[in-house]
Length: 295
Image (tube, rainbow, N blue to C red):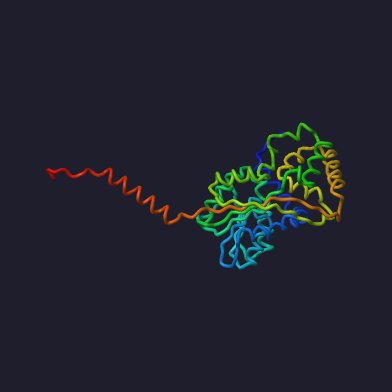
């Protein structure tokens, strides 16, 4: 079997599944967008970056608030859907880990359930920090771990019971919930440079879609498709059926917990500038040769 990187797999997977995701998981993730924009304090005349934008839900909501919105996603099919759904915003294909945007460009950067699908979320945070104006805010949402999340738990239990355990532990499918607890999330945000970090736990309730309930679980699990796509066809069919049964099937009410995190890019305050200027003056003074009595 030819191994591929997580980034390559995610890009190809989301491009291939864009339509299915829009019909199944998008309505669930969209529930986080209003809370995210409220936490970011987005208002008219702001510039907002919708990172890992998918079909452009956050960009569309930001535009409705009067903001100027830009969306970036690495899946061309997702960007095409976003451009069709939200023609008022600007969308481009791009990498969250290497953003093609200017430094200090945006008032707010939002990532709605996207960091789970980024190979290096720490680097994505650094890029969000670079893209923000001083005093700007970066906010993101993230599904909680299976211990607290019935949808993710149903997916993992089905894989463990009906899947190939050798494939379950593939290195490329490493933990999708590394940012699902506040301690880990806060440490990552601080490493990226953010301060005034705050958290809120969300409970998003929605009706299970008539079709593709397993696809909803996969989307919530982040890297689960990296394992699932390696399963034999008969095992995958059984896994999908087990997920459907565990979640109650089409029409069931589902309650899914998530974490919302927001951090601020610190401003360079006047006192800080003054201290730095004083240090420079002192260094220059020390480097000067003092006049002698003969001179």
